[in-house]
Length: 375
Image (cartoon, rainbow, N blue to C red):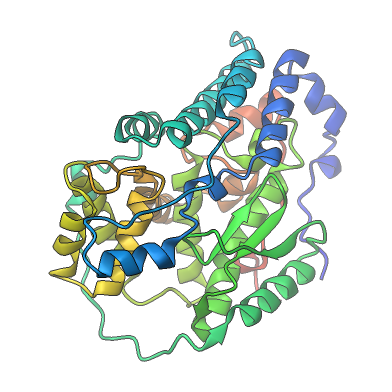
């Protein structure tokens, strides 16, 4: 099936005209940053390479799992490169690209130093720490989910590949990757979906993850690749919460959301808050007093990964974006806003998309099937 077309070219907007409206030094900085993201797989330096072994050690009494990581040996070179390509900020696009470079530099420092201080600086810059309103949310616990995780990774990979093909996304591919804390993730810079081949899935996940990963993450990245700046395909500051929130709403839209996902996300944001003062073992015990050992381990792994000393206070706070984003996007759509604004690329709810389109350096994108009228 061909992609739904809402093409800027059809509206009289040529790509060359859009690019010409942004000064060359800014476009060059954006391109150089994109090349860094294509070259450096940051997730492979963030996630532990020995999670199964580390879990066994933790079960045997270690204060914290002895995580090992692929070292980011080129960190200092990357920081020099990011500083060298910094664009002028007297144009709105320049200020935007500069903020993106700042965020990447903070991630590089966090993966180089692996300290609570470095991850704290990253969280503050990205606005990841949950506020009082988010911490105060609550949702009812659902009954136990009877569905078994009996689908192998091969079934998930086949479903993702078929969905890419049906949407005309021929430049994207699926790759197996064992160095992941998630089961599936999207690498926008490489036009790649990564699947952990050791994972198991529920039948529901085959629909849920197509809606989440392809109909949101891949489509936003794909549309962003058609814009004047590459950062629209890899993410603007603040876009992560909007996109992850939209992905959770998309799961609900296709009727495949995991039971209890919102109550679990409340536990995640509260655990992020507590992890600023607790080490891995104390945090794990706190969660396990209310939930299963498996959920306690999964949350602790997600929010303590990257740190050299998970036994000490400190947190990788990114996972707060799921609940915050879902609540904001759900409210935004209920208020009657146009979903197409969120599909011009990887943008946030607070980004002035309409103004950027009027300025001539942003154009409409395509919508995935889940938002189109049934035919």
